[in-house]
Image 1 (tube, rainbow, N blue to C red):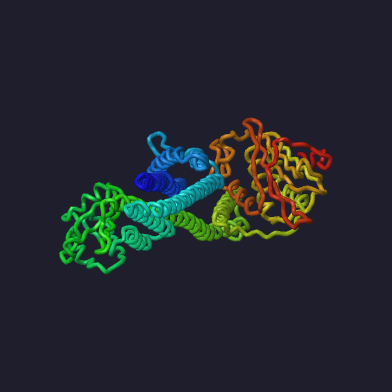
Image 2 (cartoon, helix red, strand yellow; image 1 turned 135 degrees about the vertical axis):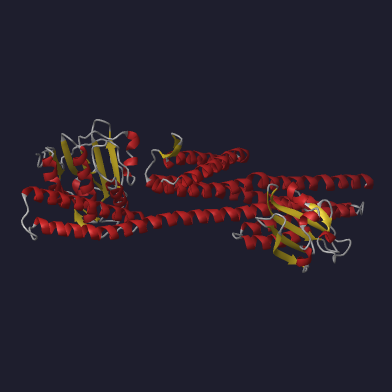
Length: 628
């Protein structure tokens, strides 16, 4: 009976703990092969999208083919990362797979809004969404990556909790079985000792993973790798060496832990002469005699060499020296291999973070350089143009003598050209201020009805000169709003100027109304609309027209293409919304949605998009005010 009990306990002490250990290793293996690679790929994708954005912006600003080539390279790498993430997320399943699929769709959307392609054997900038939409897609990608990383962290935390449960369960099972088996067979004590050793290794591996997850610079990672290797393998000491980027045969000491090691002597011999280069090529840990590093080491002392990086891209080595009280065994090699993968992921995380920071810095530098260029350009060019206009004014006023009618006409045209140039320079300066967030906004209580009517009068003569009908439809009962009157007038002026410019016949209508579901005195939003009977705007161009320097190439109308871009920036700064509704051959309607200040809550309502339906209520004028 005692023999049978001992046999049962012996078998149970092996099978049950082994099962728990296998579960632990399976959980660790899932982290290693699925969760951690997904984390790295998501970080790499985030930095890649940031680099793409920099190169897209650089190419659109300068047309530099180098930026386009970098964009294609980064895009190819990001597509590979997205494909790998898709495969791994399927294995992960659940919320991770759903979020990874959402991220893949957002990356596809980013390809559409980025608007760079290769056409006619050269780099071209195809139609793209507005800068704000590209930014929104990038923000969505960043948010999706954050959510995915959160899901991965939760899954990893679940795995760590499961590992802890299995460890505790294994320890309890071992303790109960060993206590019972001691009465029958003292040999079961060895089984308990082995399982406790395994639990120690698992706990040490978990501590190393947790410490490496908190590191964000290369020096800290190196030190924690050295500490973790010594803890995991119960080594007397450990050193971390990095491979020189230019000479793979040169190793430099990055960190050390434990009993001091004669590191200088250890590194005297080239590592490829000691047989350790095979470890780097194979990507698997190896056990060597410590004399391969220093002749002064004890003859029987051994070292485990753990490669860092990939076989084709070595980062360095971790060398752990055994203690006289705890000799290395072959079973230590599996734990060393897992630890090497964790350490490699930590280094890769730091590299990707550095690349992300570098990409953000480059993007910021490009925007700042553009702003400086705009400011310097406006300052250096406006002064001589102003001087030229002054001299032309003197000629026009006859200060230097009488001028003929033909000369007076020429001088007037010169001044008009100079004024157009000064206006363009001011638009560029305004665009630079808008892009860097330096628009001046002075909010006050503004009567929209009066503001719209006074602005309309400034453009009535221009419309009459083109023999266009000019309709102003404003209710005097519109509520006052909290906004910047000059900025709203600037937007209305840009919209009216464009409507008159692009309308060859018909009517330009300026309308101010509340939301169709509100009454004039209790409106939550006001809409200022400029409607024309021009050629209309194709649907695929309606977002493009709000980009800076974007123009529909009809070849008949002059302009720099910055008016709508400035208006969009100003509207965003005011907390408003600017949109267009149009169809080819049916004219266009630009609508500015202004949130009305809420007297009760003390807040402005969020701007909303106006519907395509235009419903005239009793509060709107039924006559064509000022029709020409």
